[in-house]
Length: 473
Image (cartoon, rainbow, N blue to C red):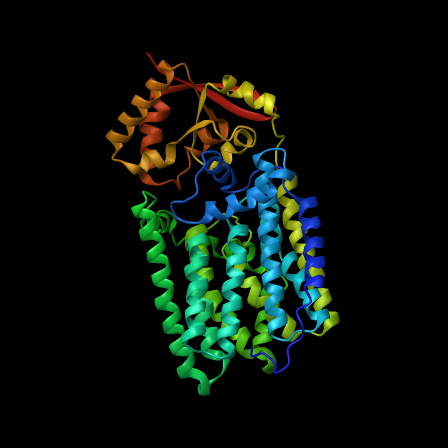
């Protein structure tokens, strides 16, 4: 885990070559449909947002990448798609510098970049519009700072580590979890002899991290921005649940499969003398990462989203563990898994309506789209990101039952009087019957929305929806 006395010269030509090849692969595999929060990202950017309520600087990073992508994209969806690839390639370049720093050979560096770039959790989010890709280069910077700090722990490098983790946290709130990797990595790096220095550096990093995050959140709040820390806490409280029956699924879809082959080889690396310390550090870090993933996702399939940062140390462990031929085989396995996850999602997508068909659904733009989950918005927002929407799930849990009902009814009538049509997808109507919704949401849907309103079914290009009207009987 420490760097050699003589380091190779940074071969940026090779890094750019591999990065260009991976960018081309990501472009070929780019998904033409939204995934996860992708539709919300496009809506936020269409409205010009630069500060996100939980991931404070997330939109700002995307906006910068959009500016780079704009000359090469036909619409905002294309800009965002390119932005994801730019962010992922940036992470590969940062990781290449880390490989140079620790003294890897050229063959190791080239194969490691392919291995990291092809890892399922990395490749998938390079090809989908979601929140993970913009976070990855900042996670890579934090890991680079961690590796440097482990070489010679001290106050200065500890402070830089705190700045890097703090910056990553401002881009995605799961950056807080990077300390789950930083602590064991630093403490195990130099054994007992370097324990005191490691503890000191870690303490400095923690203090600086808190300072960076609180300062940024405070400045944003003063400027009228969101209360990010409160939003993060509410998000965790809303989704947290120990549904043990989903543990096996969660382990397979969030760790073992999307981080192959590192996820399987890590226990072996922990038994080998040359990789024991870094492998143990990653195993220790995996526990809180996996726990957080399990309690917030349960049976949601996010394809390794929250665990993706662990691909960075995992790749370095494999570089130290495997000979070049085996490392090449590992890169092939990673690529195969990543492409498989990408194609699995792409092939499962229903027929997507065209822009003209979306306009037909939206009554020429004079429509308000009601939704429960963001997935129901994807066919609409793909072409019309600025359309008016109402989050029924959020509304139902944001206020007491009577207030939520009155607020919705009032807004519905106002929209109707202004000449707008309310529509909702057939999938959302079906989701309202689910028993795993929050209690307040179930009551709002079953005792008010589904009773007070009627729904006329329609279908356009495979998109099933209903127009919503108020009952008069």
